[in-house]
Length: 251
Image 1 (spheres, rainbow, N blue to C red):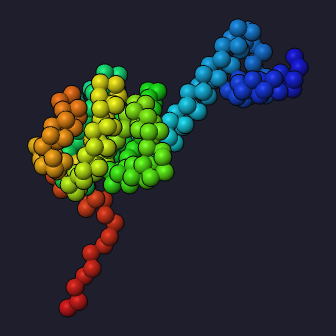
Image 2 (image 1 turned 180 degrees about the vertical axis):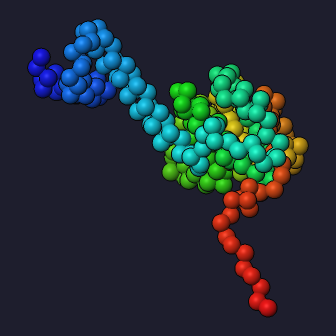
Image 3 (image 1 turned 180 degrees about the horizontal axis):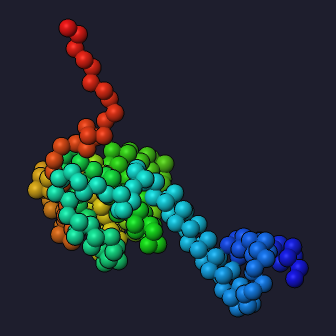
């Protein structure tokens, strides 16, 4: 078989997985014990695996997750109200398929953002596109987009993304522009895409944080009523993981 021309053609066709597998097969003496169909099957399997890996890498780059988190690494040892059954149910990503939301609340340092990133990482592994957004920077980006004409395009991009994380919801009361921006984003996504929100503020206080009764009703109607809720508690996990050594007092 003329390996070099074949390998070049595989490269031209962008069959990178088959290209690599063929080169590896050519180095194995025992490969001749396999039939043509078996060898072809190995080449096809490698191509599928290679494409899946490239697709996942691309989705993770686009997601720009704050934490490199995976569900398999969740720490259940520290008591913080984290239910394994709920996490296992969310790990199926059926909530993403059904275009439902997820609200994660609790004090600072209990792992809200980490868990949100872990669940989003699983969604990326299952083929969904995602994007992580901190609320203060999102509002800055929206303001800049209005100034330079990118606002409609930015809203369209957010509306098409399967899962978005809105991290640090409600740290400060919303301004009038921010309220209207958030209503536009959630209206486009309602019943079509999934949104994860993390917040130190309990959901029952979000109405006052939005700071406008009418718009608060509209925003929360699109966000809260079709959402799973995880309410974490306990002290900051950062304290437990701190590597600082205590300074001894001088006598």
